[in-house]
Image (cartoon, rainbow, N blue to C red; front, side, top):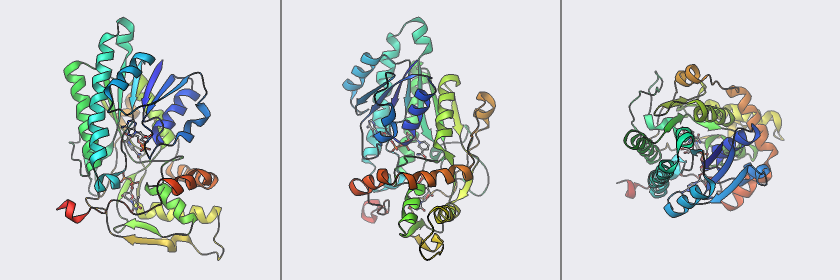
Length: 356
Ligand code: NAD
Ligand code: TYD
């Protein structure tokens, strides 16, 4: 099998590529624009592998997409390319609409035209797997979980753009018969996550003894899943998921942000004690809340677990510990990003003029 992975130089896409190649599950064509968020180092090891090819392409570029499909003739598409950071979508939604909505439309058009030309077994085998987020369902109160039947109620420009892309994929399946499947996953963490996201930002700031900015009161809850468990779930959905279905993916690991940050402080203290022996918890700083901040996400992934037999291998405790250790060991990687692409500044405080 040959899989065309969009966004394969990103945090999750690169974990998917590592899973596909190291498990000898498929050959891979990585189609990625290489935006600020790309981390090609995460697949460096596979760059010269006979089963790996790379195309630097913007998914909004229809002719380039058509050429890539014609050249590589994939058996499946895993679509992960996206603008992925909520705070950036608050500052400027333009790239989110372009890539997540228009880009998904272009990719669907290209994949559908390509699939229609396939014959017999090749046509029957073809799959389009759209990778999305639980944030499309909106926010939960203290109780309940998102199921595949929960109505869409996105609250951020990011989640609205992902919701739009999910609807496009559904429509291309129902209207044109494109053999598509969608998965909606909770918050991921693990190696090579860009340091604008909560967990890597807090690890790095804690290490550098800088303030740890917790939005609001830190009571917002996220359901954390290790990126390699997500990658395994995605391979399972691609190879065994039913066409036209959606699958929720989650870690059953709900944590309040303040507790996540506290745990990170303790783990960094354990591995790199401060000179004066005090706890890094005293770096925690409560800052202005994110506009439209969803209170709680929690995913019911029983459909995926029961129908396809997936379950996570990491607990949040084991996964967070190895992730903190990974960031400590890969300082050169994140220092390069801090020097050139993102300095850890606060993002997403909606400009009140723009927001009206
Ligand atoms: P990321 O920001 O780390 O990586 C995105 C990748 O897409 C980058 O390599 C970037 O260069 C590429 N890209 C962006 N725009 C592109 C374009 N126009 N054309 C081609 N490539 C482009 O994102 P991630 O965290 O790895 O997320 C991957 C997917 O999973 C996204 O669709 C996201 O919505 C979804 N998701 C993420 C999470 C999470 O916790 N990170 C959870 C659930 C779902
Ligand atoms: P994030 O990693 O941006 O993921 P998402 O917004 O997609 O859930 O943020 C995770 C949670 O952490 C979210 O509730 C916002 C919060 N947060 C902070 O409190 N401080 C920070 O500096 C960041 C980046 C996030």
